[in-house]
Amino acid sequence: MDALRRPLVEWYAEHARELPWRGAGATPWAVMVSEFMLQQTPVARVLPVFASWLETWPTPGDLADAPSGEAVRAWGRLGYPRRALRLHAAATAIVKRHGGEVPAAYDDLIALPGVGDYTASAIASFAFGDSHAVLDTNVRRVLARAVSGVEFPASSVTRAERGLAESLVPDVDPATWAIAVMELGALVCTAANPKCAVCPVSGQCAWNQAGRPAYDGPPRRGQAWAGTDRQVRGRLMAVLRDSPGSVAKARLDAAWPEDTQRERALKSLQADGLVVERQGRYALPD
DNA sequence: AACGCGTGGAC
DNA sequence: TGTCCAAGCGT
Image 1: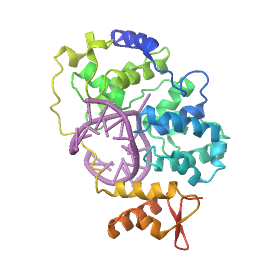
Image 2: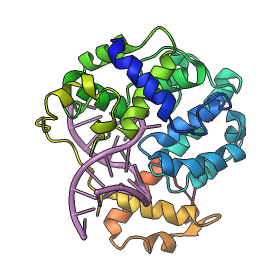
Image 3: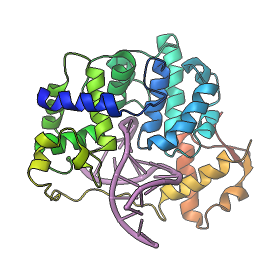
Image 4: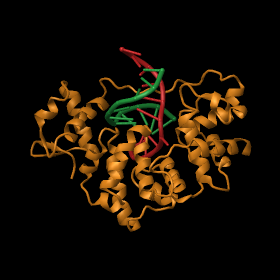
């Protein structure tokens, strides 16, 4: 399968973006922080938060020493603030179980809060050079097109897909292969308007060869937003992020007009540990 | 297995 | 303009 791997790795050598979590200067902790922030969030939005985060908390121990609410506040508007809580919890676990050093083993990584198969594989590969199939949304899309000849992968990872990804991991420099496929998916083999004209593997891409047939699988799940609890949670979290200390209930009440939904959202935030209540006032957690 | 979970840029 | 979507995870 070097027909696919070689041109793709050569393309990466020439077109890779210079990102602060790549290269020799990046510590395993920096790689880990970047992977948490990049879960469902675009690179451009992560960059400034990543920089200030590592300046404030250059090691897992530094973050573990801070209140989790400070992590949530520093997370800013990256979205999915439970990730900030989980990163804080992961830092705490790293101090407790691994002497403050990010572990290199996949099994240790995936046991950390907020670390699933993708993130464990990514950290093991990018920070430690280990050999893993790194199967993220970009890689899945590239393989779906180049190998399977369909525009989009299935809604969840299939056994065949996992096997394919594992079969492609090279013996030499597996981490560069992993990041090269991801980068191609991010920059060229994009979900909408893929740039097949400049793709280094368009010549052996099954989907391209077939004339780029339109997707005809099951409908892909969209993300409702307006009027959902998620939107309400976002409003409430914005109030707390932007207020030092605690706020009166009235401040939260002003963020959403409908009582039932607002109370439900607030309760769910408390259940998640993103909000704490003390004597009728509300704040980010300690 | 399918769903809930934020945010904002691109088209 | 509204829809799509972005280096997923936990349940």
